[in-house]
Image (cartoon, rainbow, N blue to C red; front, side):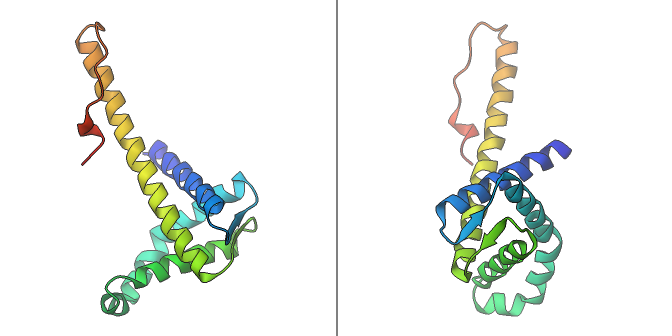
Length: 144
């Protein structure tokens, strides 16, 4: 449980670093500011985001869910105000940055889970066959 939390934290940190590299309006001064930004963003997403989504539910329904992008951008800008080495310049940088960081974190998390399943199944199959051959990866582990 705790290892999974640390892995998700590191994945979000790497996603923030990738986002800062790709979007001009987002700057980080170092790895630790990205690490702390990921921690604060995770806490805000866990505790504050559900309350905001419930409070803005009528607007979110009227906008067909597009208001969620604004909520996510506001959360990223809040993190920018709390962490000194993490800066977000502009609303649209926050919108695209939050979308890109969520997308890259989701992709890397998905790949890490599937790679773990492939490694586990490969080791099990290898030990069951007596180590005579290494099985090839199956595409079932990489798609849902």
